Image 1 (cartoon, helix red, strand yellow):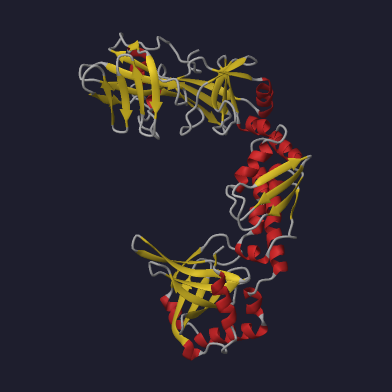
Image 2 (cartoon, one colour):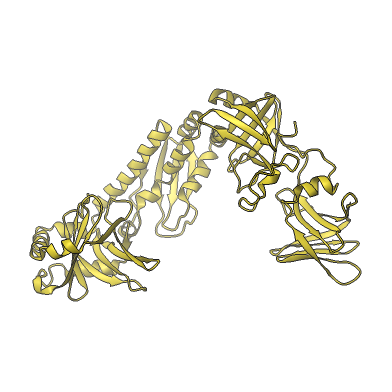
Length: 509
């Protein structure tokens, strides 16, 4: 909605009819803008910075109306036209500029997105100015324009209730049922109704329900049971940046304000915390792949526990493999079963030292790729999946070290740092050549925004934004930093640090 300041609305309301209706002598320029499907805007620029706009080819209250506007300009001198709608300013037509080109956009109530229009010189020359002026005068005398311009509380309540009702319909479609939803209008001020779409703010819990129900029929059932009714309490223009959904006995109270952000996310968290909703929803979003003596679970990144891949045998215990937020949930680090044909730089990761489980829901299949070897698996159906997940016991894998830094001095000596996986703690430093690298006794490790410093009995290893250095008994020595992920095979196999044949992934077995 292109709503703007109240001063413009008051100016326009005061001008209508106060000095008579505009005549042909008041017109300074005329323009016609055309869009898709016979959409058009006839513009009469008037003296004194005002204008008349006739909107054609759209549905809603602006259709066919000749509305008085004020013509204004942005800081970069792009013109726009503002009228009064329901007691507040509405930016109807505006020009934008990108890459040196101008474009015009039409905004009308009831149409979610702007409509692209362009100057139509042919229609502009044929525009009947007298007809536009006459229509404006007739509509003004009949009160039709005042009805559009003035604030009408009952109409505002009806419109916002309709917005809420549309959200309820969406829940009904996605969840197979919907809660009774209402807005407590008693303490909501007119000024707040002019400046905010109350219905949209109050729809947060409904948007959350529709999103959660999509994971599985079981999730939809759990969501319906958790929230059977919801009342929206409006707290004013500001004062509640984090909205709150309180649920008790299936009844919800949604408290929200004009400065509330991420409304659907906050509501979603509250609904998932109710009963078994969170667990059921995540079970619905998790894929289960079975075959070749393996059972692999692939959970979404937003799973509260064990996101990404876990593996084991059907009916047994599963081992969780740490995931990487910016890769798909099926990707996992495995330097022993990497694939040299994979992308060397995918969102900062070298996929050549990763393996993955690819889920194809359409074909109801999975593919486990370990290096060049591919294993076909079957995607479990909903009933089998829920049975397995309901009984699943998952543990973290034994190997929980994450490579952090690999550096080398001019003599070929390596300096390698690892830490607890996903945490800035338990740093370790290894120094030496291939096959003879040794752990150093760490006195302390201090991470900061630019890197970290590790102090040992033999010296200090420091990683900064643009490099690394080692300070022993002599002067500080600059080191060459090597990309640690791209050199994962060197770290895990050649240097002999871990002495492992696998780090605990589905590819080990």
